[in-house]
Image 1 (cartoon, rainbow, N blue to C red):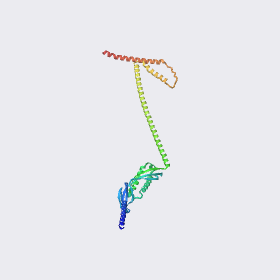
Image 2: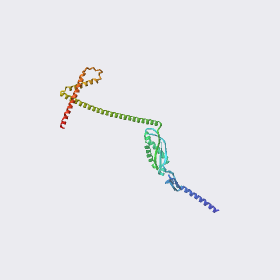
Image 3: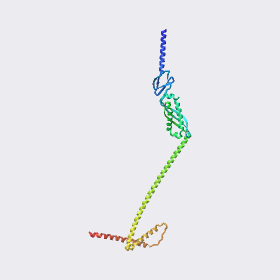
Image 4: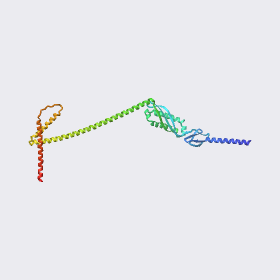
Length: 326
């Protein structure tokens, strides 16, 4: 009986020892997944951080205090009302991207990391956007995002966190303000349309004036050319008149009294022409001797014949020496 009791007790002790050993191994072996890090405390004090993989710690002395996610995370920023610099009430929401770089700092430097980052972001959104006008909020989102990222990332450095992006998703002004902005936009577009229309009319007037200017220049050049032609015609007429006068004067000097009839007939005919073209009278009664005019014209004809006969005689004299020389 004593031997069997001893064997039974040894078996129970061995089983308990195996179970205890397995329990200690299970409690001391830690597998850290990829993308995670585990800060370890020994008797309540931080000692090390377990990287991804298999690790052995001392059971009951060491313990895993936190399981920290080292991957980049995204967190929504809830909507909040903000009063802008020009006293406009707007509703704003956003999103923040961050990543833990130091698991120990993220675990021990701040309590409830996500809540801290969220409150810090919301506070800085009110600060940054509250210092800007409504027009700046609606047109300069990139500038707002950059300012928020700079401020929040600097504040979270001591927490072992890197804020990678902060984006403002939606800015919602009140309905009456949206309607007012729509009217303002319509008025601005109408203003631009009026300016463009006025500019078009101005260009049209300029082109029209330019065309009138060119027309006036061409007309003036035409008048100048016509005056030049008229002057040239008068000059040639005067030359012809001078030659005729010289011819008549030569005939008179040679004793031909019929040449005087040329001047009398010329003036006589010019006077009749002026009377005929006058607009002041409809009926003209004028006594005159038609035979005098006819006689003057006959004198002009005889004078012309004499001049032509003299020219023929001169040509004949000029041709005689040339035949005698031959």
